[in-house]
Image 1 (cartoon, rainbow, N blue to C red):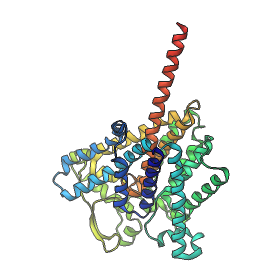
Image 2 (cartoon, helix red, strand yellow; image 1 turned 30 degrees about the vertical axis):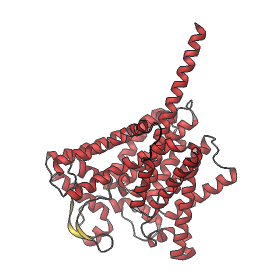
Image 3 (cartoon, one colour; image 1 turned 90 degrees about the vertical axis):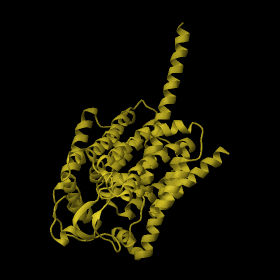
Length: 424
């Protein structure tokens, strides 16, 4: 019976990932709720583990100090977005109580394989076999679909290999590794490339001498904050390589004047107007933001099908979205929680004496957090349904690290008591 229940929850998770590929919000949310709601032994203890992530709602509530006068609909819409990371990390925490580690990791890998086949098949159906050599054009031809299951599956395979944990037979392992790597290629997504690089770098990061850790983190922070404010001039064409090279140009923050510049660098223009709107407020706005606040673009911009907007409720830049809606308090809370997770879990990941499974889940936590922190700058990752699989893995890993470390501590205490008894 227990194996049947595990298979059911694994299937629910798999379907949730596939639904997120097509950005089907209602099914994804419904499946996450189904995973969370049914009673399970020690359920409240599991929910309690989500407390650190529930703190993320506090800035949103404080945003009502200024935002209470805004549209009720827009306030609830912002509450909905700010609840997304809590919902999916909680779903991951609950899955840790319902699915054993081996089955969960296998499900993640299979999800990556299925998504890789989906994106490849759909791309070929739109562009023919030419999609295999020009995945970037195919990616835009098929529209906005996708889920970062292949890079996450790739991470599961690489880290289990690193720590000699056998999920699949050698030939099957190689096949799944190749399929998921090809899936990352077929998406031709800068976001998914960032996620892949975060985990790949972690594979060797535990070998870095401790004295270099904080300088590297500091330089990474400076790079993320400073570089996007500079413009990189490039000749524009449709190749993925030039798209990557022009990323900073596209999101570089500035008050662009011409319609062409606004369209080419919309994300940067959008961010500039959001930041200017934030600075135009008073001290309470700077501290607490304003839930339900709209960003005035000062011009009408064509966004999506049949959508010409001057005032927008959501930004591509997730950090500015947090700043505008929840103020400096929100940014500090998010930074404190997620950088705190990196610092605390790094110790267990880098500890060569720690159990391999604990080190793996610590690496998953760090990789997921880094992926969310970096991609939040360009795709509002914390509040994006597309990134649900990353947040579920974060919650699952967080729960398992704490449970495994608690069990290990109890075992060590029992051994100490036995040795103490022998000495007496």
